[in-house]
Image (cartoon, rainbow, N blue to C red; front, side):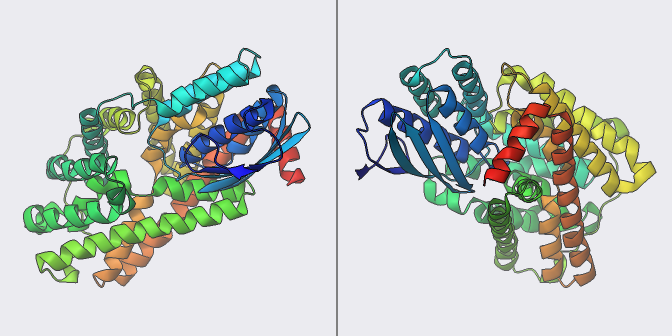
Length: 434
């Protein structure tokens, strides 16, 4: 029998009644796989374990083969077998769903939810509206960008122009949730609009810094640093196909951003050589750099739908991550400090999420990860090359590869070091079985 299970992007074949106990279990596990897949912008390596565990607690067996935008699920129970094909576009914009999903999986593990109840609760999670209205997401994207701006240039001008240009990105990002066609080209549209605005309005005086430096904070929301690091972590964990495909997709997003900047350059009639990368002298007081992490974290919570109750926990993790990076930079250099800070972030978030009643690791890790991310270096490198600054461009691209790898491996090492030994053994067995 072939057809579709209830749920988006799911097709199946089965040798039994889809309405019977086995069919209900297969439908639930298919939707579970789909939801995890669509929320897997930070990595797909946890999907298999969650689905297999849920199947075991509900009286069946399951195996999953995962790629970034799809999965093949096989469910065996009640002397029947079902093969499910699941497709889902990986994103990281609904952290509230992952938090609710972990609570559901904990109930299943404790034997407090049968298949029918679990499926009902999962459907409620999938159909739930975002926890914040659209205008708060818009505000969150602006705060997210403004908090990041002092890291690019510690100037009041950088902060002020970012507050304005980030509104463009925020409007497009919110609009993309309602217009699927815009969502597919969001990096291109956002970078073209921000590039044109910056070149025509803000980049009128070289003393304010290079145009690319003025653009980057407003584009930080659509820069794929998370995908690049997730890909590196998946490669390190042995998920070769998944990690390689995710690297290709992240590169495609970077190219969209690069082409958008060139579109703005062409429309404005400027020469490519205006894309210089000179920083303006800092005029922000030192305390402002530390305070900026508050709007940055608040913006992350609102933009990525992190439950409000977790604001203080993720803020503490952000400050711990940044403090470790700052305190170790003088001893081991920026790259080494980034690696050590990533280890600390991975260990702290994994340790905090170790109990079933705690939020998922990725939710706690996300803001601190963004504080370390280096995807913006890829955009800087590409634009520097197009402007004729070959040495600067290749240096930025090389630094991006080094920093992304350091962040991914650091988080991976911190996670492995603090993961319960039983979980590590299960992961090894699963990889050997593959």
